[in-house]
Length: 174
Image 1 (tube, rainbow, N blue to C red):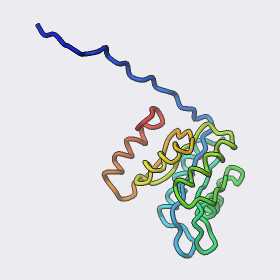
Image 2 (image 1 turned 45 degrees about the vertical axis):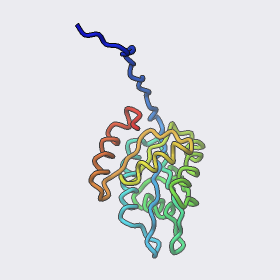
Image 3 (image 1 turned 30 degrees about the vertical axis):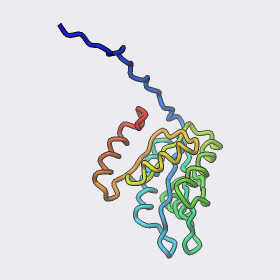
Image 4 (image 1 turned 45 degrees about the horizontal axis):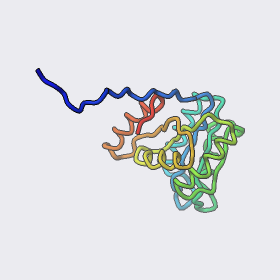
């Protein structure tokens, strides 16, 4: 007969908290422009990804965030221009063109999302950038509902982020 000593009562799993996707802000994070002021392929892919997400939420704004001017153009300005060329409505685009870092992307975008009366934020970035972006937006008080990222060349990060991307809309993934 075995006797377990010191085994306390079993702990229940924490309850799942439903996330409110009624009107999320889709926040597309900038990525440095080329010297001539045009977008690099990674930034273009982020814009296309954000546009795809926005099609699922026709009531939601897209916030494009990024300053870092090159040749008189900002990351946010170039993203806005690309969204317009692709037919996205001007009245659903919010431009934040002062940020020069991910910390500033978060600091400046969270209040814009709140002012637009959104239910939270869906971040759009690259896999290798996702952890930092999630942390910076949480630190800025953002209600991050999910993060959509795409592979960007680091297989070990890409696999882990894919799993997080699949799970994050349903549960808090740390």
